[in-house]
Image (tube, rainbow, N blue to C red; front, side, top):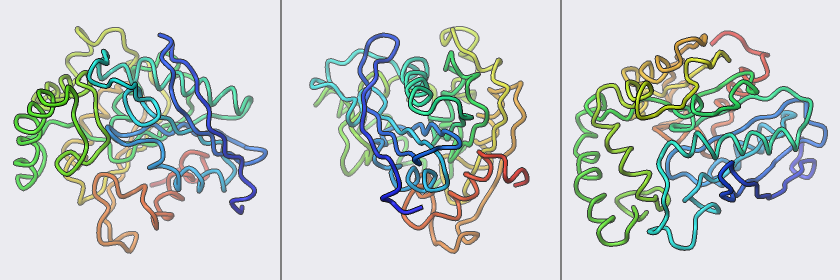
Length: 292
């Protein structure tokens, strides 16, 4: 399907607390299915544009969106913003799902979660409207389970650059050290806490992170892990699947060489030239491909 055959429309929708979120719909003219794409921490919706267009070219209606505090959903004064990390799952992802269903009524809905987008699907009160989940580079942030070579970068971010940036700007400023988008204080603080906990946020689900719906999720999950990803790896990927105890799930481990590329890492699956990965994901979402 050529690009001219796609519908592309920017829209906004309110979360349950009234916060306005920026979204983009990329859709086939008569979609056969709908796909919600949820972002990794610090990735604006535009990062997933090529991927979304590819899925739309295969007949999907695809919605990408900016989490509150990021990209088009950022307030004028980010330093003054009051929120916490799990608001992305409790409030923003559910609002995006409802917006997608309104734009593409009557077709099956699936979900692609990149990094924290997979972490937070269990916070969604409307998760039962999703038929399948594809997790991409989803693994626990517990830093001692990451490669030793990557640990100094993480420790410096958590205890050097992060506190300095909060003191200087009131938020985590993107740039050379943190290469993602600017992040609110309310994202950084719990994220750092969880990344120093061997259980990440898992044990907190029974106490401080209530209400949540992780135990109620039954839609199947296939989770793609790439061998050169320092964060979502074969040690940390299973940790996230464990917080969804009642859903069939599987881990798919791929090497960059499997796709003829030198690097994938934590975000490369969504970059230009990764159509073979996108086709694998699309096949799983539609049920055309059932075996990894």
